[in-house]
Image 1: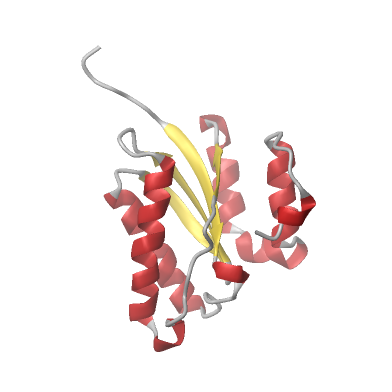
Image 2 (image 1 turned 60 degrees about the horizontal axis):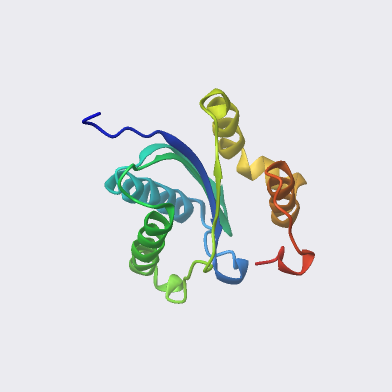
Length: 151
């Protein structure tokens, strides 16, 4: 087989450092989402959607066959932190959290995940970030310690 192929749909979630609401301003948040999508495309990731709220981001993309999830996340966080600081003097202390959550998504569930990510503002009027995180961990069968749900 001469050519390598991969299509690994990934739902990535990460938050601002200490979950501070750095992305409260809607225009700033939209600019950040567009920038994150651009960087993901530059990492050879097929982008479907980036959206989120003031303290965290969701992205759905096909992971590049030549990059690891860790290297992709490191690059988008590194470059977007600098981008945020250029956007506004009020973001001089902007940082992303150290960790991230990445979950696989089947081709048959893409539309459902896209709708979920599109509706983050409405979703978080009813569900806290911690409850959302717990639900992901349970859905993917990941055991967790409650002490670390805030991370």
